[in-house]
Image 1 (spheres, rainbow, N blue to C red):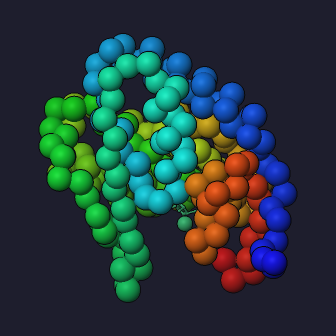
Image 2 (tube, rainbow, N blue to C red):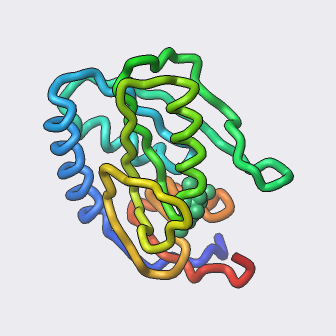
Length: 176
Ligand code: IMP
Ligand code: MG
């Protein structure tokens, strides 16, 4: 038997599906038929991407990007696709946007390196009130102010909980 704590339900499977359909409709309308280059940041966006691409009714491609924290705590690109995104409409998927530091770094890198025509952000969880640096989220499934660590629906705590079908909340660890 696993001794993992069962997270409290923050948003149910049904609530998530409702938001995915809504965002999918908005993306379909906003891009109006132009080819979307969706790029998911690993690994927290795998479930989000799987659902969202089925809620968008227009051409799109899927790629993945990964970042890591270097020893000096600086964020670095750990994995970047070989795909040419120049002059394309890039839609970046992120699991949680909290202080905005991670996303801000990624956006800067993409603008400079890939030179897309447009660059937008979709996130599962947006903690707008925690920003330390400006970071606009174009499509947020859920904006939350609750304290705690969100897991499930692809999101992990030390690599656990990604397979939970709902978004759950754990008490934030005292060391965080
Ligand atoms: P930021 O740089 O402070 O915006 O942090 C964003 C990154 O921290 C996300 O990509 C997540 O991987 C991680 N993160 C922050 N809060 C949570 C959470 O509540 N659950 C899971 N991951 C989180
Ligand atoms: Mg994580």
